[in-house]
Image (tube, rainbow, N blue to C red; front, side, top):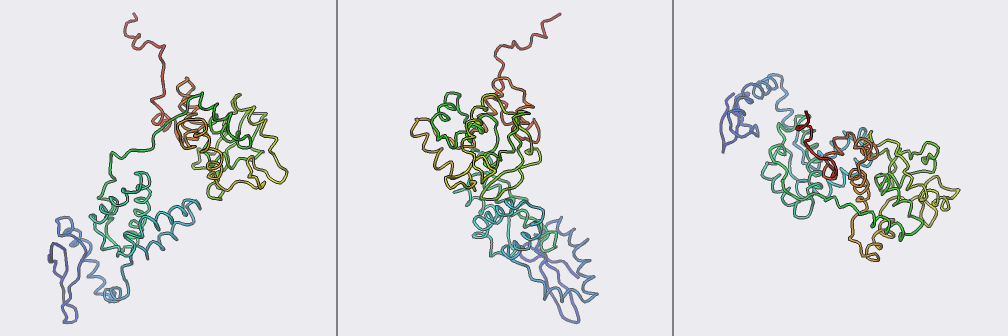
Length: 356
């Protein structure tokens, strides 16, 4: 069995039953790939030839397209992914991968095609959305490697572009907070008060039940989240937590009791007396119109969470407490995100150097 170069690609040539055969190894002709071929691939092919498996597999085993193998990969992970994560993977694949790479065979995709693909996506997507698309595609390639369909992951040599602006933290001032709360519809006022004064995620607030409000211990139990009509556990294990009910929040919670209805366990229900399936209805109907009315710069509702964190940190609250309130996995995550809000204007720095 002989290793040859054809157009800078590695091929093998050999005779079997008096007939000459040539087969591509789908590898560039490099020193490392020659070593791989000589030490691993050729011995494996020789073994399969001797056992009569080589041509049988060659005829039966076809390299699938990305679209064909995505179905396999999707099924592999369905039992250990959260339902919404699986749903998001499917959405990302259908919209951002399939139209560009779906009909290509897995072993034919080159790094240059990956680079072109991600540059095309960046024309309309944020860096965060591109990262998600890369993550989905990466799983497909790694599963294909595990199944010995391909030898390497072409995505691994193409880096994600840098210097693309990320979502900016734009906290509300205290004046803006109370202006918004005073003018928002009373039926959802408590929703936004919880957002501003606990730092809970919007989906976590939506999923709150009356039984989660523990006045005796002064806590709100965060045990679930709701998005796209699906109720699930919060984002991470650390997100399953108890948040303190600050004194400022108590009047909003007490006032919201007037909207409690017997047929629902949830704090927030629609005008049809049904639990909300998603936050978007609340935002569209009650949040967005406020900004034009009050002449306040618009920010998305997630900025309530950023506002809580930055407000507490800038006013000297303990970083570990803030981290626990937010449900961050570590306080380092909180510190990294909100370090610029740590201030201590009164403390004179470096005094220890002059003390004797």
